[in-house]
Length: 322
Image (cartoon, rainbow, N blue to C red; front, side, top):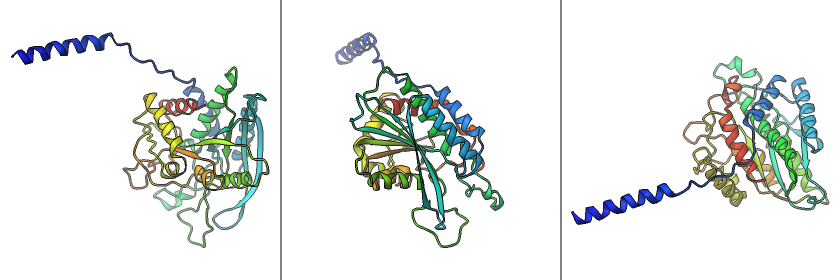
């Protein structure tokens, strides 16, 4: 009885002490999910952004205008890469440089997302539906929307301490369609990042990058971002840093500690060809068959798959690194 009495007293004291503790305030980086959401809607207004289509070209012009309006020095990288049939595809990578003379020589942070959309809905069950263009609200527009809001936030800062390059990669999503039965060219995905990384290695005076972050499919209401394996292998320390930041901001359940399979995305070629440590933040559910959401590469990739709460989480995590 005496032992239980003293335990009870200790329990009450513990409650009193805990009540007197002030909750630790987390400083949240500035980011507006409403703004990011509107940027996604604007991209959708152009229709599918299939390479060489009017919607794609109009979107590219708009992206350049947006970056310039936020004070970026914009570079348009043009080139060609062979697609899955070996045919040359025209590529337009859009690069926004955020820097000042005072920090121009410092190492940079690279942020990337692809702005093109897939020409085929090759995950549709009905064969005839596979030849529609993917609308690309989440697979394409979400990452771009978040990075445009990042660009806007950078323009509002009194000063920058680290140079930031935002790259909108082209022709990421023209990899071999499921219904194709002919001879296949190698490395058919992420043509824009392959071009950028190859050109980067050939520069005589290369800018130095600390590391990079690529965003892909970062808007779904049920999004989960596991630790993608290429990111772990090539940029494990930076991946840990980003996931730690997500945990501190209260987004640990979204930025999962589970390890995913390696995913061929733009970050892979930034790592493998350019030699820049780069982390992929991508929606991938290790519990289902394909790993990707049911609407992936279908006609259902529309604004219903965009959640402001998810955009806010991803945006805050990215901003915490800048």
